[in-house]
Amino acid sequence: MLTAIVGINWGDEGKGRMVDLLSENYDIVVRYQGGNNAGHTVVNERGKFILNLLPSGILRPGTVNVMGPGMVIDVEHLYGEVSRLREAGIEITPEHLKISDRATICMPYHKLLDCLEEDRLADKKFGSTRRGIAPVYADKFMKKTLRMGDILSKDGLKEKLSDIVEWKNLTICGGYHAEPVTAEDMLSWLNTYAAPFADYICDTSEYLTEAAKDGKNIMFEAQLGALRDIDYGIYPYTSSSSTIAAYAPIGAGIPQIKLDESIGIMKAYSSCVGEGPFTCELFGKEGEKLRAAGNEYGAATGRPRRVGGFDIPASRYGVRVQGADSIALTKMDVLSYLEKIPVCVAYKVDGALTEKFPTGDALAKAEPVYEYLDGWMSDISDCRDIGDLPEKALEYVRYIEKKTDCKIKYISVGPSREQYIEVK
Ligand code: GDP
Image 1 (spheres, helix red, strand yellow):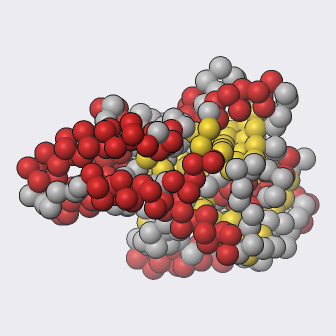
Image 2 (cartoon, protein in one colour):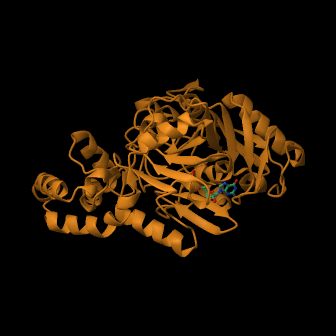
Image 3 (cartoon, helix red, strand yellow):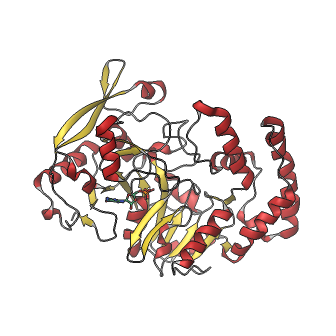
């Protein structure tokens, strides 16, 4: 089985939790895009883990984890993440962590440039996580970055690095009037943080090709959601990578395969970190209560997330671009306190109602049209069977299934591994 697990909304849908649960049936978990700009939270019998770079299968001893060519890797962050997991007793060896030689290295000057640009933008800022992701992807397409495989060749590395640093300083010093970076410092940084991963770097494309031929089950783990995709998201308030399922084989390193399945992770309400249009946003007490109930604070940055009711136009669009075959509906338990559940059923753009998800100016102008459904007002976090759900909760599930036109296969009712319902 070749399965992509992808986000339907703005990210933070609970992908980490679902990958951790479903990875039991997979031999390999591959991250195929992005860097440490998002966090996947996994809670299991070994504790609570926030993974920014490592695939969520890393917590299962028998699973092989691959960081694909589509990723951008801040090796200092990776070093810290691996060290923290080792301290918690998780074994990480080249047998179950493989890093693509084609993956791009996110350097300290990428982070620096991200911060310099966010500061320059001041009140017009995009809400970057300041982790260097946009600058490193830009350099990748300028063909002026180092890739993980480069650290295996010591002499070649020095030369490449000094050419790149010379070019980068044109912007750092000339554009932003900041202190230059030096090739020596960058080399020493790579020696400290990248060199320890030398044995983990390989041609993961070859590895995955063989694994797919051998009939291994491979899961492709996305970061962020459909609405943050560089092409199909709420541009320019998107991430800099492709978050959609169709990109998974490419970013993972096996462009020749066809996915068997795309499972969309969709939240029972909406949340969004950072700037940009978020039509269904709830404000005041209504928003505060939902934020508190869902503990909506960024896993990577700690920033309070914007929250809203379930957004039908946005979610139906997310299901479409992700080509989702089924849905895992997460955080249903969070809505248990509501007597009436807000649902954004349509957008109003220039006085006209639409159920389509608009782009550009139309999206910026869109106002939400809210309806309120009956809540169930009881704790559902111990429900393990669809029959255990109160009638109103079941009605909510069926309603969302109908409106998004996609089968709901899993319902998550809590953050722990066992807190879910499989809809048979
Ligand atoms: P991801 O980026 O999509 O993996 O999402 P995050 O991990 O950033 O955010 C999801 C948060 O919600 C984490 O703190 C999870 O532990 C938590 N979570 C996931 N599923 C559920 C659920 O069904 N109920 C509750 N209450 N929390 C959940």
